[in-house]
Amino acid sequence: MATESNDPPVYEGTVGMILELSVTENHRYKGIGGELLIEIEKIFIIKGIKRIECMVSDYNEISKSFWFKNNYKPYNIMCVKTLR
Image (cartoon, rainbow, N blue to C red; front, side, top):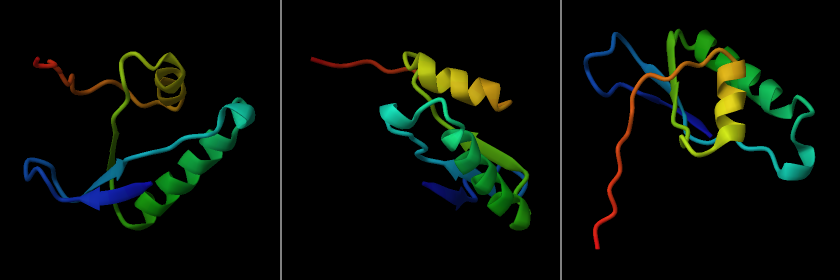
């Protein structure tokens, strides 16, 4: 699932946001995620979008490995605290 965002205004133009990209466990490591990502990126390129963002849990090593392999780099750190 991917979308466009104009927020926050510090960015020049529209930002592409990948909200969800997943492949079921039985189908991983077959290039499916990479193919999905290529298609999403093509759509953003056609729309003139130059920046793509996604969020990945620091605890999800499989997901982090996928994004880093596809040349996505860490940018922001989200800090979380659970209150009781």
